[in-house]
Image 1 (cartoon, rainbow, N blue to C red):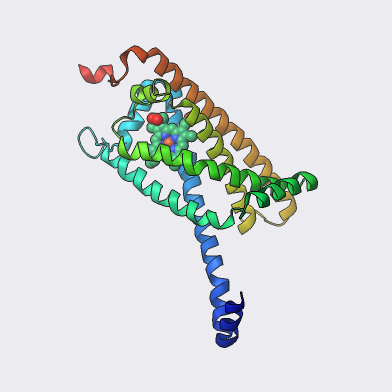
Image 2: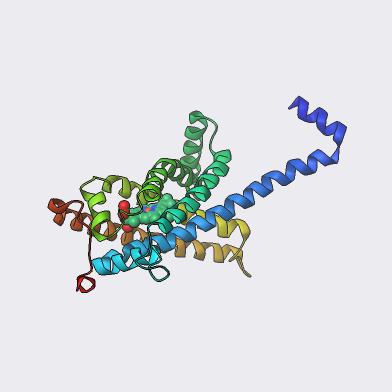
Length: 253
Ligand code: HEM
């Protein structure tokens, strides 16, 4: 602190400028990486939900991500490449977010008490975000690492075997709740922070935004839960043939 003051008084405005610009840039990068991840999740959970329309639908989506329309039969390497890109953005986003974590457990508890006493909804949202963000450090990394290293094990049977027989469903359940809440709160805070939907009447529009995001978050939780139940059901029925891969019947003839 003392050293900063001395440097500042010697260099004057230059350090002041530098001091104020870097946090703003980091803030912008955090918002930008968060937005990219949120958009990714919005589409990811919908693609995952293709299992609700049957095994053939999920198989078709998997092959699409293997770029089977581009090279014959596609290749899982493209899924690895996508997982690598998402992993880099994910780590960078988490790294930037670390600045905002409470510095100690005591500080965290104080914040929680503060939120309870004040019934301050924005503080509550912030607490949801750091708690789910902390969980995502671990849960997101486990999932991304598996997708990165075993891209060939994705499909109606392979995924369901992982979810049921490899007992990954508790992890997916926690990941689903964490990521949907984190993305919902994150997108809401982004909209408020940058005033995207403020319009003529910011107060009214913010309340409206909050309501819409709440509804969309609940819809996503329901879609995710039903998808997960479907993977569990298929995995259970397929348990005796663990490891066998799905084949579209018409392709075999
Ligand atoms: C390119 C990277 C990714 C790929 C290829 C991918 C692929 C998949 C696949 C195939 C499943 C079905 C279960 C399985 O096969 O194990 C799944 C489920 C899931 N993924 Fe990802 N994923 C990626 C990134 C992420 C990220 C970054 C998150 C969140 C941090 C995430 C959250 C989830 C959740 C919550 C589920 C469970 C879905 C549900 O319950 O409906 N995924 N993912």
